[in-house]
Length: 74
Image 1 (tube, helix red, strand yellow):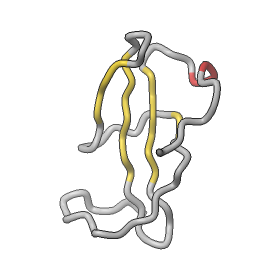
Image 2 (tube, one colour):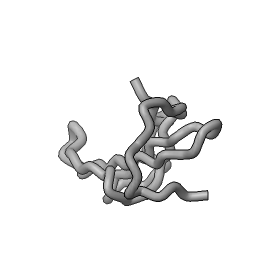
Image 3 (tube, one colour):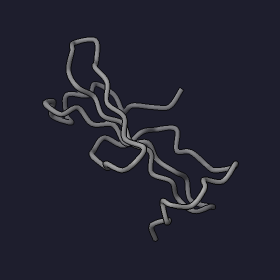
């Protein structure tokens, strides 16, 4: 079940510490560059408790198999 994104985010949420490789564009989407000047895209998808919320990471011109390890939240 997807949450209404017009509501105020709660102060508390659970976060999956491993990011998911894939696109999930929404109003939280941010763009930046990797150290190799590739465009990297990150989006946050909030889940209703007790489910964990997720961070999605995607490189526009990079195959997902090129990630040497699963991205994670520090």
